[in-house]
Length: 288
Image (cartoon, rainbow, N blue to C red):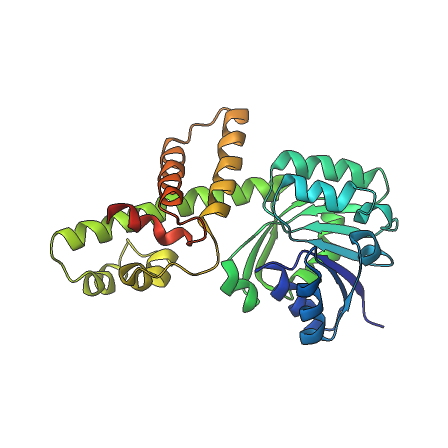
């Protein structure tokens, strides 16, 4: 018999992630606030849908979340129709949302009070990574809970690692976003510099991408940046949310993030230009 799982949140990431689970033989029941999207998913993947998070989680051995922010996570877990109302003792809740480490720790405690496991497991890889089943998953929680859910996570991940106690997955995702912000800003400045200098930027990138300057952003975004195409899924609004989470955590733990704070303000400039839904490589537009 197929293992019963629930998936809450069918956005650009959750929709294909839930699809991979269904295709790998799991019995998936989904919930999404926009019912039409859940209907579309069920038609595409021959799965099941529920009318509430609580209904979706009923009888599920694993419940996956992939929603927007701290308040969204609290609502779908702790509210009257939240998943924790129906999850059975011994089941595990996996949160793939990018939220604060504090929320992860809160939910860990709430779940433990009901003998439910909890793993915070934010992802990296963007929409393409979700669609291709090639996400990187950073996890925090207890080893016993992680070991139970890792086989299911492998349905849509190329790398999945437990990095410490509850909240560690979210802290790792903050480090991930800090790195991306700096790299994208550097790439944007290099392309701007090259354009001002009259260089063939595409030719230059073909050369320097073979050396120490190489990065995922360079390999996958320089061509579209030069063309002014910024429709790759991970929006500036979402990046600012993530960077603000990291900056708040930095204030809490005493770390100093001057570059991150600066790039966050550069993304605010992009928002003022109307680029809220452009992807993160749109930092180059500030120089136009």
